[in-house]
Length: 305
Image (cartoon, rainbow, N blue to C red; front, side, top):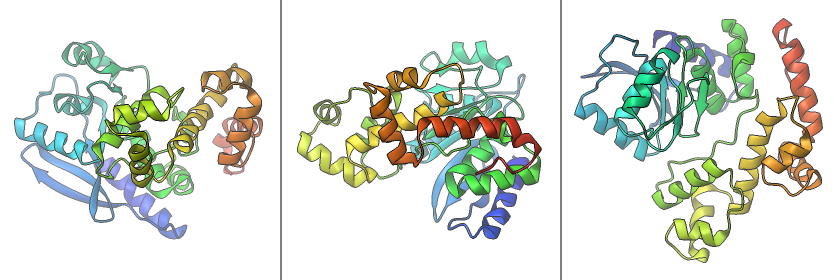
């Protein structure tokens, strides 16, 4: 946790140098569970990090802590964990029906204890928008960078990684920040629809089906969804699919045609048009830039763009 605090402090200094609009502030709050670091955006609680809990340690938390974590999640706080800290989130019910990771040595124990969680223990980092879990003992560095990316932007994240000699190429996600819409708008019915869309990448999601999940009429749903998220449902789903396709573009053995199909597009041409409209370059150009960065990013900043 001290390492995370130092990483964010360095990110703050990099943000000042880059004249970033928002700066991460770190507070320390002592609780009955010990000390925990809370990441704040402006004046409201933005994220909570459950610290590592190593094999052999007591992985149980108090009913008070469970309630507090569950309430924070319902309020739209980004819930995070490092290593065995996923057990804290699991006990609070935050991970039920979601994907998560933890340390590989805790794989079987976690699966037995939390059967409702889709455990992806082979992944270093699992980002579910409002829930981010990191696996290995040192994966807290990737978690810290992901939160810097989320709150301060990719430029500040990369300069922080360079200053700390952390290789961001080890991150399973691309250097580009993923589509991360707000979930703390207070409309719980819309939040449920957002989570469903993220799990299905918005494929074949009709207005009528989304409205039914929100238990409202299509017209009312459209108004509430746009007010809560800032996007209409069609644009929201397009951004979800394009964000997912970025990760697939990093895999050189998957053709762009196949990526378009996996992301729910009828053909490469329609996918290409949407991708260029949202990102500013074509999928092929994006893949070429990712390849350059992966090949030369370890030797300097010339590949960063």
